[in-house]
Image (cartoon, rainbow, N blue to C red; front, top):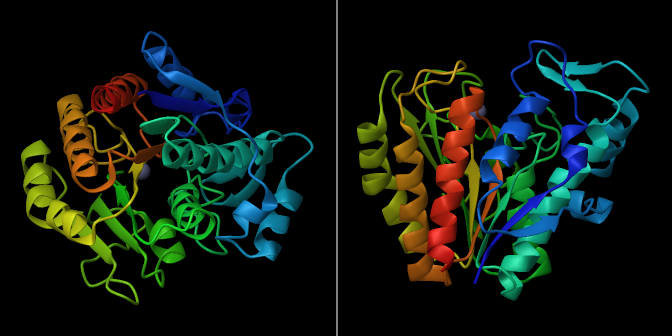
Length: 308
Ligand SMILES: [Zn+2]
């Protein structure tokens, strides 16, 4: 069995202003780092509007389409921009996770990684923010639940920032467990342990600035993994952000590349126990190009090992 890699050249067509951390070179570095790996390479389709309507209202999708500029940039908030290629990129990103869920649930792939941008975990029901337009990870969850009829799915978000969008989109979804760890305090400011969702299916794990891999591993072993095993998801979706890396310029956690391998291997082990190894992982943040490439490669190598 294989690990699928889903991506599309359109995701390189989402351009941001000079100096913006969420830039085209991120994906270029990742694709280069994954070049030599044995992967089932899949061209990401565009999401259908019906897919997006599982998580966003029609008016929001229409507004995003209308906001895209003919040239230059359109600015949505302090740090979220659209270029002429951004809407296509966002539709490919959303389409990638939908197709990845289809591949893994049909058994055509054991697990999958979506090398996409723009990222998704900050996009709320009606608010694009934090470089994110559509809620990719939440869409993967809803697609698995509503289209494939799964009864339980889990999202694990180890990006250094709070997955506020995923939390918002799945806040009242009893069939989805959302586990998100984040540096706190840090933008966007949400993600306190008291935020638990309508059905107590949201688990927020704050991590102290300056803390490293040992603290992260202890938090996941004592809080995240027991909840994940008890929920018995039929699919695990990973919001794979690599900005908790010690070299990342946007935050102050000190994870090493090996910590990303560790958390991936542990999630693969739990997936083996509870759901035949089914994992769909999607790229979120990570802004030091070399650290991002190395950590992503370590993440995907663990997915490949687990798929054997
Ligand atoms: Zn982040």
